[in-house]
Length: 374
Ligand code: FES
Ligand SMILES: [Fe+2]
Image 1 (cartoon, helix red, strand yellow):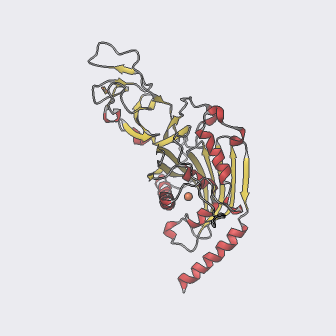
Image 2 (cartoon, rainbow, N blue to C red):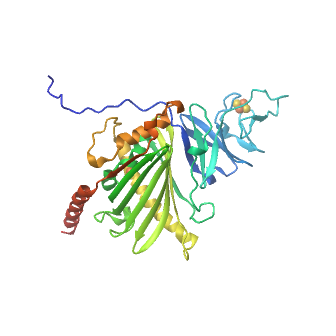
Image 3 (cartoon, protein in one colour):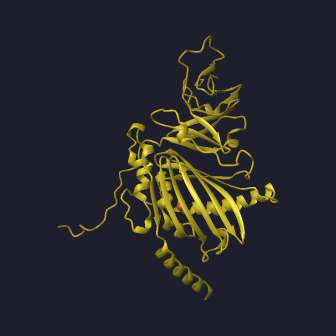
């Protein structure tokens, strides 16, 4: 018998080579509305995004004539014009004109990606099987968004290299990292997965033993958060912050899209609910400060993701949350639609008993405070 038979080994089957089926947010609609075509590197390829009278459209980035990069072209009429020989491509993928040619070849059609604008953001649908999205998996509108009840988005992007986006989704169930990585103090934590939606319910307080700049609120404030992934990559996270007797309603969008199988872009933003007597400017200022606190939190996650190992067999305790169940839920987006099993989409509900964690963390915080004061 080998001496180290009882050593737990890390299992790692490598990142999946395919990309998730689902709606992916590429950014705010305004980013793409400046009258020029835009390149977005995503899903191991390159897309061109441009504005048309019917709204923003997404095509394969490379021209079917001789491979020119359409994002370096211009918008002419309702089409994007290639910089190489001026072939024009409409939002539906059809070639709409070739000024120097007598006729447009009948087969001149490129791939148009299903696209959608919602909540002031732009989405494309990705599916290796080339299906069209159905209403059941659509991105829900944020209540009151279209009616102007929210501040504008305070928005940021991060690029993460050297990690698969599964790392980010794991956060949904990872109660303990909120204390160590995000400097929050969770005391209520529950997950529900059902269909294509995975939700995290969390109540937390800021840690009183850290620099208040890195947090929001004081130790008496409470954050009630309900964060749901709709599909593989887009989370809507209504948050209610109770601070100094005031209640602040905010909504956080936490989304990503893969660039390659080992890198992804995070798009995230915060909007705050407009309140009686609060100017749009003031609401936006609050949104900006929440965004900077949250972006600090993302920075912390990033540090971890950049240097961690992919691990397919995490070693868990009872307080760790349903990591395996979450990953099984997540798998539904990486298999053909006919291979989605009932166990991937069935309702699963897990609440973590946080009593022990809270007691232990309170002690740690008290010791830290004592050490800094003495
Ligand atoms: S490569 Fe695009 S027009 Fe020729
Ligand atoms: Fe995190």
